[in-house]
Length: 273
Image (cartoon, rainbow, N blue to C red; front, side, top):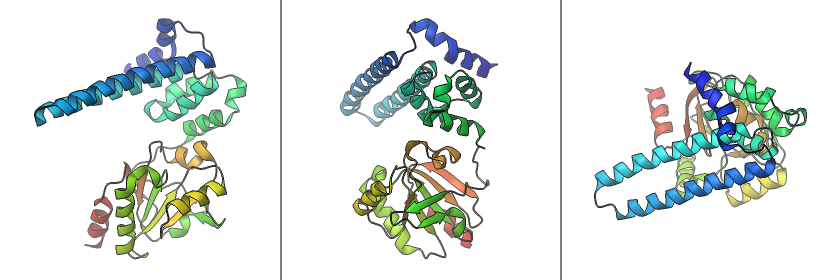
């Protein structure tokens, strides 16, 4: 009953309350206004946090900020659903898809104009609706990709060895994250662990430039399908980096948003005991 009520709010109440015509221009205006309000509130929180006199006060502000951020995400989800029949609204709806139920997204997709159903983001939304949920213990999607030199890669070729797959590249984790990853790669053998970084870029030239900017001993690949890559959709990834640890049989051990030093080592040491 709660899910039905939430769908109703998303699909009808927003339009009734805001009374905006569903156009690309109005979506961009509403999105900009929503983001500006959130950024102003975030700046206010930053000032309060800097002036806080105790850890208890900082903890309280952190809780309040997290609640504000969730409100912002829910508002953006509702806005993207309301304007999904516009190109930018559909793109935003795709970006917010993991916070929306598939029931909601199926209704949204059925209401799209035919031209948007056939667009990149329309097809991506349809694939998301069909994709099975990836859970610990489940088999990982056998992604197909290529490195910067054009050599093909299939995830299945590493069956028999644990694999750490990082979706989103290396730039998003900061220097400390890259240093940790380099150290992890150096202290493990390829019989113990393999590492592959997937970049959601659109061309081999982009991948080559990134591999040059972030040199590493481990593999860096892409399928050159950009923001709507099936890897993102089938693996339920959006934020970067999203990290997947797979066991030697290609089953998911854990998935994290962000790189958490120690988690991989904990698994490897427990596996060897």
